[in-house]
Amino acid sequence: MIPFIIACFILIAVIVVQIGRVSELSAKIRGEKEAEQKANEGTARLMVPFLVVFLVLCCYSAYYYKNWMLGFGPLQSASEHGGAIDSLFWTTTVITGIVFFATQILLFWFAYKYQQKEGRVGEFISHDNKLEVIWTAIPAVVMTFLVVGGLDAWNMITADVPLEATSTLRATGENEFIEIEGTGYQFAWHLRYPGEDGRLGTKNYRKINGVNPLGQDWTDEKNLDDFHPSEIYLPVGKQVRVRITARDVLHNFYLPHFRVKMDAVPGLPTYFVFTPTTTTEDFRKGLKEYPEYNVPDPEDPEKMLWETFDFELACAELCGSGHYSMRRLVRIVTEREYEEWLGNQSSYYFGSIRDTDEDPFKGMVLDFEKKERGIAFRDKLETVLAQPDSLERIVRFDYVTFATGSANLTQETTYELDFLVDALKKRPNMTIEVAGHTDATGNADSNMTLSDARARQVYNYLTNNGVGAERLQAAGYGQTKPVADNGTEDGRKENRRTEFKILTK
Image (cartoon, rainbow, N blue to C red; front, side):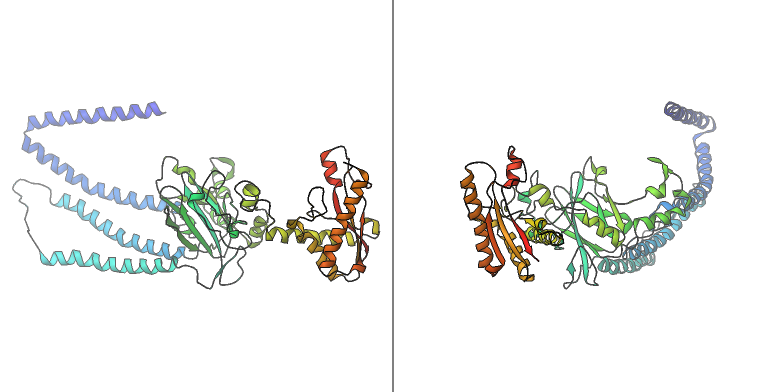
């Protein structure tokens, strides 16, 4: 097919060259002036049908492709502010369209009407004040209205969130919004969401490395629950503030269907605020009503185009050879679907930084870790309390540890004992036995003494924190009650444990 097309172009070129040669020979035969006159007349006559065909094709192509263009057909704005942009664009299109048609008609009509003829001399007008005023004043007035309307729309759609507003992942009030971040680099967008605190942590470009792509400052606890999704996921009808940055060169954060477009400038954070008004699924249903989108998708022939449609984030700057690969999916969903998606996200810090050399809190237990572990402790306690037999009402401490070969509690793990203190204070009738156990390594008598000392240490901690001694017992069992094989390291680790048995509820 391609060789055939090339051959056609070559043949057309040959024909054009031959026609030129024939014209030259005809001119020499008829005389230069007569040939020039004929050429002018022929060109002038062709101008009018060319004008008609040109304008008809312009109108037809606009009508034919209207359902593929933003702002027309099914591609109406999917954000609250987008209507203002579409209205401004349509107003500008109508005004410039009138000028376009008028100038094209005059251009081609003048070429026909004032074609060169023997004896005709053009009139030279050096200056005309009236004409100058007209073609200066009219565009100035029109531009004034367009600029004022544009500034009004700009001020509306770039207004930041109010000072009293609060950022949250779960926006429920009128003054609440969701803040996310998009960082452009060659060649992708790195996305960041805040965690449960609803706040994005601080960054420092000097901290950017292979495991910290955004340069997050891990000493800022707001960073610890931030997560990095691979696509933008947002609930419909919720206000979103997008913090926009760049890591290397100039990029442009472009959400075409939401009429969001803002430069991402290295060293100069920008932002945009918008509110999605339709879910991805509802937008697809709108496309389904148009025949252009009821054809098989070339990349997935088993589905129609409307079924595979997705909102997208693109880069609107030519930022390099891999510019095309900066596309990211944008999914607008219901509040319930958004909550489900949030529940499946995990903190970047805990997935990639925790307890590595990059972690400033290595070896420490953080406050919200304690909170999560407290919830798990209470759930485990409730489960054990439901057991009818006291022999089965045993709770093992998961985080209480002692110095090696000693009965001294490590300070970082006493928070789990605080969970037990709270539980005992809430249940005044509950009594317990604290039990210490060791593995089978070493002397059995020494192990018995050590386990008893550790149980007594826990006993003392509880009494020192307000639990009555009459509600507590302490016992050391040494290596006499293993729960795993002492022949393996994992088994010995299981046997080295501290636990408590609930005697009465």
